[in-house]
Length: 304
Ligand code: NAP
Image (cartoon, rainbow, N blue to C red; front, side):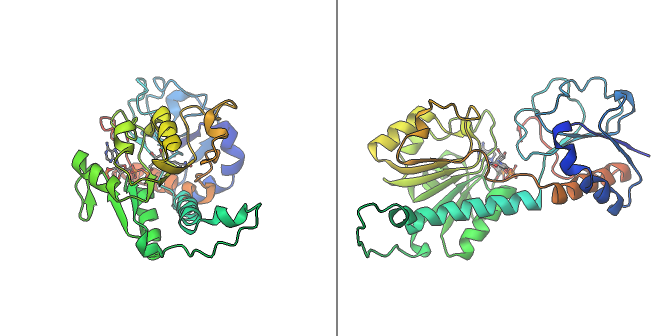
């Protein structure tokens, strides 16, 4: 009977019912514990906020199953030799789609003008149709492609940019330039890796159409903050809605808090949901026990 260590004590109350139920539903007879002799553990359910940072004594563990989609805080851990999986959770994806569609529509429809209108201005200018508002998504993985699908259903023309060649998507520096050049709304859903850090910088921000809106629910490090502040101040960027930051919580004295064309949301774009993510964890344990390849295995060399 496999022994599963749930190594994130702070999250246990959320998973106490959901995880055992999902494990049983997957037909696995397993024991789930929150503390164990490392040498006896078969699977580790994990998040980088866990007190567990040294994987060396977990000599028997077949996998470390991360509860978060982003793995930048664990992928480089030198003690981690076991296979690492990241979270692709239908509940998390649903939340991200809602956040991205909601914030895209806010800017597309110019909602702020009518929500805050102290002078009672009567400006009957109608917004364009979605089909006239090109959107670009950098990162067309689990989350980016779900957001693209939802935005396309509303008729937004969506351009996607990713690392590996895929039909209908752009890649590389040339592709990035093309993807940025049309983007009235730019959405960044890339992982943080050495290749993506500061991808949005003085040079790349200049390729966007003047007044473009940026939504960043990916990672703070994707953006060079000073370059973004300059681009906001010059009008090159019309608005930035930022959910993620290099330092979280965003320090009280950070200029993003007070900039009139920046919206800060406190890393709430999408959360892993216990009910749906437990099923993903259970499926991976079933696979591990059956000797099948794990779902969503992280490629350490690539960093995501
Ligand atoms: P994913 O499925 O791994 O997708 C990542 C995408 O980024 C893929 O399309 C990948 O290209 C592309 N990519 C990676 N490196 C690249 C590079 N150097 N150049 C171009 N494209 C590159 O990840 P996901 O599940 O969609 O999640 C994306 C990120 O969202 C996570 O890493 C995390 O940082 C963030 N996130 C934020 C929240 C929040 O609440 N704000 C919640 C969850 C996740 P390929 O398709 O070619 O591999």
